[in-house]
Image (cartoon, rainbow, N blue to C red; front, top):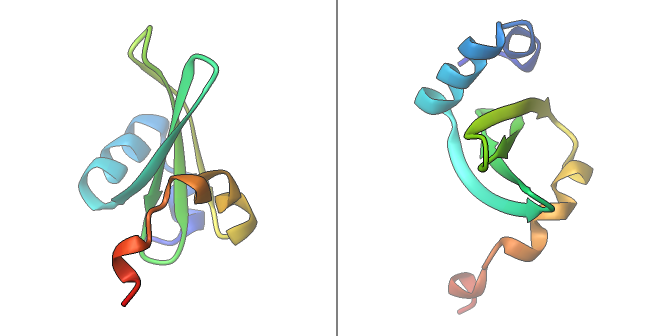
Amino acid sequence: MITIDDFQILPFNKQCDFITVFADYLAYRVEDDKKYYLYAMENYFVEVAYLPVEGTVLSINAFHSANDLEEYLQFIDISDLAG
C-alpha cells in the first residue's frame, strides 16, 4: 500500500485506478447534484466527488483527519454491533 503523500502525487487517472483496486468502500452521501463516496485505505481515507449527470469524477481528496468523516456519520449503521 502507498502512503497518503505518494497517493496525492499520482496523476488523477492513476488515483482512480488505485482506488478501484485497493480501497475499501465505506459510504456515500448526496449533496445537491453530486455524490461523494468515502473509501478507506490502509491508514487514510479518500473521498471521491462524482457528478452522475455527466458520469465524471470531479475530485479526489485524501485525508487522515477524523473530523472530515463527520458528514458520513449519519449514513453509518452500527445497529448490528449492539449485543
